[in-house]
Structure formats: structure tokens, C-alpha cells
Image 1: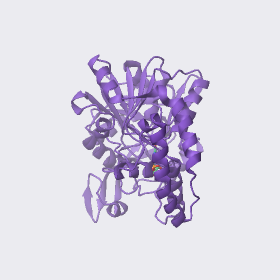
Image 2: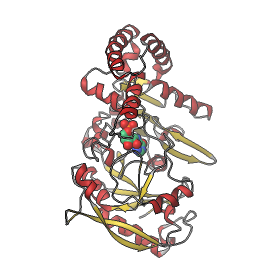
Image 3: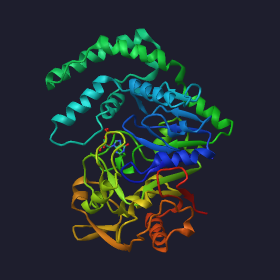
Image 4: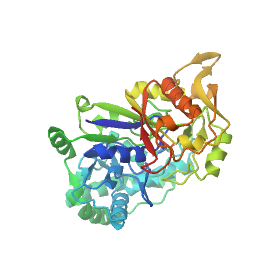
Length: 421
Ligand code: IMP
């Protein structure tokens, strides 16, 4: 069984924890897009792990993890993550494989990302990890790929060549100059460390597939951060929707059996861009509980009511079969809970988000109000023992989203998860 897992909203839906739970019945977990802009938090026993580039499946002993060709890899950040896991007793050698076709995030990509964000009047609110500029070089056909790390002479020549051009841009923008020799030395050192992890993962995944090993494609970010289907231009630079899992891994579409979408029982977003259901009431409540701070940048996430206009579109564009609903317990203390069932745009009711960001800014949510359950859900183990009001809320979200709910999560721990029949 090969499954793709995607985020239904703007990322941070709790995918890391769901992946960790699904890994029990999976052999191989694959990342196919994005880079260390992602942040997946998993709590196992009394240990908390925050993973950025390495798939969350690494926390399950013996499972294999692949970082596919569609990702962008900052080698120094990846080494830091590997060392962090090693220090916590997690083995990565012969379990973690990185695609030789993935693109390398270079120090000048990070510099450009931060430089643009700091000086631009129309900020995207990026994570400043260099993700956009790396994908830009990929599409421009001027990027460096992981296999370049394996050829020191070619790596040196490519870096010298690129840095000449990059420094012209730096001068024009009054950014600090980058030093080619420093980058060459750091990347050659990184290459020695990473060499045993580098593989032709397309052939490797094909071999796993032939051996009937089950694969789980771990989506990063969420549907509305997708470069094509998201709230452009306030998006990331890769395809976060289910189609991206195939192009980003080299596994063909006919090998996929199921798409699972992870959605929060409310909505959050980090970074800039319109957010029709954003409300301070929910933001103050969740931040006051110590929740909804970004695991990559520490930024307070913007919070809003559940938006079915978004999740309805997400079901359509991802081909969602089943939903994992997370953070239901975040709403425990509320008397009344609002759910956006449609938007009005220029006096017309619409059920799907408009393509234009300027139109999205004009959209007004149409709300349906649900009674709260005013009960601590963190210890609930089955759907039937949820308060009736919580059951009705969950059922309504499924109906509005157009797919069946299979998993409900009521806390950060593995045990705080239950499956619906
Ligand atoms: P970038 O991916 O760093 O270029 O950032 C582009 C947009 O995507 C910004 O609004 C970021 O806050 C957002 N973003 C990137 N990665 C994540 C994530 O893992 N979770 C939530 N938002 C993200």
C-alpha cells in the first residue's frame, strides 16, 4: 500500500505526528518537495523531536527514509539534523538516503532569501532558509545538485562560476559579498560526511516497490502554499499537493493507492497573505495555551476558524480519500465554534477559493455556528466516547470537506490518536 500524505491548509497541520503513527504500517517514508523550511514535531515518550528535512519516519527503528529528487537540501543543515538524531540515539546510516538529483541550497540562496525579505515592500514572510532562490536556480538550470558533491573538481568550478554572478547581484543590492573559497571548503567537508547517504533514489524506490514494500510520501507545507494551487504569490516554491509526490520522487502515479489529507480542527498560517477566517479570539486563546508557534522559525502562527472553502478545494485538487483531523483538543474551552462554509465575493456565494489573491482579499466568510463541548479531550481514546457535540463537529467537517475522517488526534503524543472504522 503506497500512500501520499498532504496538508489540507497552510501547513503546520500536524503531519509529523500522523506520519509517525502511520509508519507503524509502512516500510519506507519519502520526502518529495521543500527543504528545511518545514518543521515536523513528534513527541515520543518524554522526548520531543523537531525534524526539518529528514522524514519523521526516522523515529521508528528499522524504517527507511528517502529525501527525494524534488527536495532542496541545505547540506550543513542536514548534517546538523543527522547529528542531532545521533545524539538522541537514533541511527541514520543505511536508513536515510538522499537523492543525487535533489538541488543544493547554497549560502547565497539563504542570503538572497533574507535580503529580499528584509528589503522588499511586498514581503512573502518566508522562512529565510533559501528555498525560493534554490528552486529559482533549478528552473533557471543554474542550480547545483547533490551528485555535484561527489565530484570535487566539478563542484569547485561550478561554485566559482556561480559566485561570480551572485556577487554582481549582491553588489547591486548592497548585500554582503559571498566568499567562494569558504563555500567550497564547507561543501567539500559536507560531501565527505554525506557521501554514504547519497543514492539514486529513483532506482532505489523502484526496487522497494518491486519488493512490495509499502511507501508513505510525507508532504511538507500545505495545499495553499502550493506554487500552482496555493494563494499565489504568498506560497512556497514547490508543489505541495499530491501530484508533487510523484514528480518529486520518481515514483509513477499508478503506484499510488491512497491520498490522506491532514487538517486541523481550525486554521492557521505563518507568513503573509490573506486569511479570510483569521480571528484574534482564537489566536489569543491558542497562544495563551502555548500552542501555535512555528517549529522552524518560532513565529506565532496566525489563527482562524475552520475554513471549509479551503479544505473542499484541497480534497478536489489532491484527490483525498481519507482525512486525519488534528488539534481537536485546541477548541476544548470554547462555548461556540464557528466554521466557514462558503465565501461571499461581490455579493455572490462561492464554495471554492478564487484564483486571484486580490479577489481572496475581498472574500467574506459565511459562518455556521456549532456548540462547543467544554471538556478536556486529551484523554479520549475512541470516537464514540467523544462528547456528542464534538462528534457532530467532526462529522460536519468531514461532510463539508467531502472526504471521510479516518484518524482523529487529540494531543501531541502517539497515544492521543484514534482511528475511525
Ligand atoms: P518559504 O517556503 O521559506 O519560501 O516560505 C514561503 C511561505 O511558506 C511563507 O509564508 C512561509 O511561512 C510558508 N512556509 C514554508 N514552510 C512552511 C511550513 O513548513 N509550515 C508552514 N508554513 C510554511
